[in-house]
Image (cartoon, rainbow, N blue to C red; front, side, top):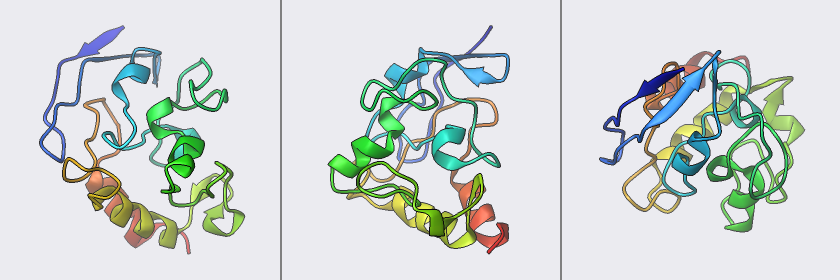
Length: 148
C-alpha cells in the first residue's frame, strides 16, 4: 500500500491523506471525498476513461458499490444539483453516455459543474491528490476529444 501526503487542490484546499493499492482507492478515501468539496474520481461516476476504480464497499448514501458518498449521484441529486450525465434520482441519463464513457458534451458540462461555486462553495471543486486521479485539465481534454 502506498500513502499519499496532503496536496494542494484546485480551489485552494488540501487533497488529504489517501491510501491506494492495486489500482484502486480503499475505504479511507470515503471520508476524504466530501460532497460539495471534492471532485468525483470513480469509474462508476465518471466512466472508464478518466475514472479510478472505486471502493469495494457500499456508498454510505445510496448503498451501491463503486463510488464514495461525496461523489454519489443520488446525494448530488438530493441537493438539487444532479451530476452531469446523471438525473436527480441518481440514474445515468442514457443520452449523455457512449456506453461506459460520457459523451463530449457531458464532459463539457462536467467542466462547468466543477468550476461552479454553487456546487463547490469554496471556489470550485478540490481534486484529491491520488495518482492518476482526474484533474480539471483532464476533464477539459475529454470535453475536446471524447466521442460525440
